[in-house]
Length: 131
Image 1 (cartoon, rainbow, N blue to C red):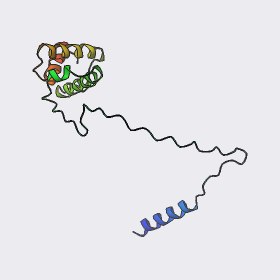
Image 2: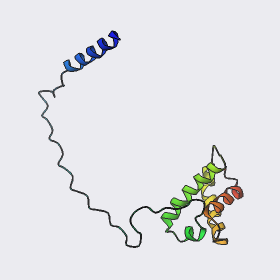
Image 3: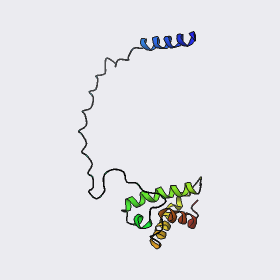
Image 4: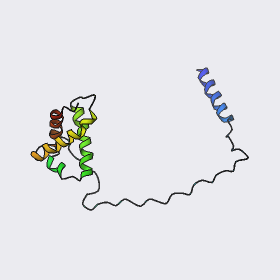
C-alpha cells in the first residue's frame, strides 16, 4: 500500500515540475484566428414535423419508399442493404452487385407497393446473389 502512495506522490511531484515550453525567441507568435460568425439556424420544412420521426423497419411499405426523394431513397436503400445483409448473416457483399440489388428492390417495390421494403430488399438479395 505504501508503494502505491509513493508512486502517486512521485508522479504528482514530477508532473508539477514540468515547465511549459515557450515559443522560440526568434519566431513571432501568430495571433489566434478570429472567431467564426455564428451559424444560421437550419431551415425547417413546414411539411416535416419537428421531433422524432420513427420508422418501423420491418413494416415500412414500398409505397412509402417509392415516394421518397431520390436522395432519401438512396440513403434508405443503403440502410436496407445493410439490414438485409445482417439478417442473412453475410460477412461479405460484392460491391459490384449493389446497383443491381438496388434496382431489383425498386422493381420489387414497384410491382408490389403494398409489400414491405425489407421484403423487397431480401428478395433482391436472393435474386441477384449479391453476396
